[in-house]
Length: 197
Image (cartoon, rainbow, N blue to C red; front, top):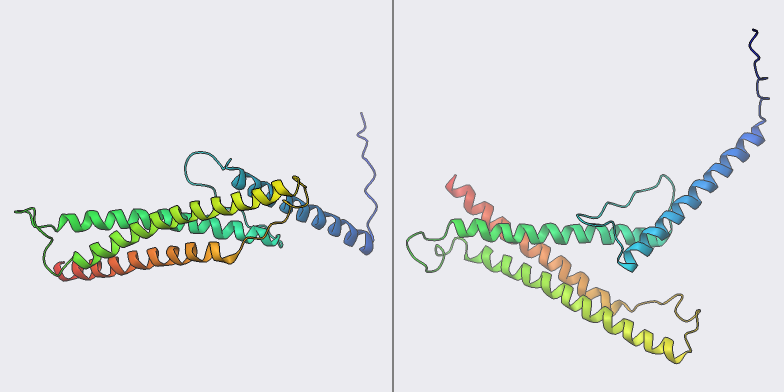
């Protein structure tokens, strides 16, 4: 039996190739925009990726909407906060190892009291950052909700709301301060360990 071959496809012109590529690029850009909107919607509604650490947002090959960069910043700052908390608690455990074994008194004088102070300050700033953020954003929401209610629940009112910088800058400052406190504490811990090794 003789095999039948389908005819070879006609060669495309340069303009047709460019149109195909442009169509594929537009399709890819739309898919990236849709994925970014889905990620943001899941994060806002609290339906994240489930248990465990959240997955890092994928960086697409082409440009993304401006809101996508905010998603990246939130992901990395969340991971940094989690790591900072673990390092602070780990630093306190390291200091506990060097506590005087024969008494319940203070730590070895002048060696690890200062890093212990910075680690405690870092953990305090960590808690304060989240408490302040929770209260501030809740009050902002309640304020805007009241305005929305008085406006008769108009859809256009709640569509594009800009938050004042006064809410986010204290949270950002506390974030950088707690990371700096942990870094300073570990500087003193590592310096002390270097003298006894």
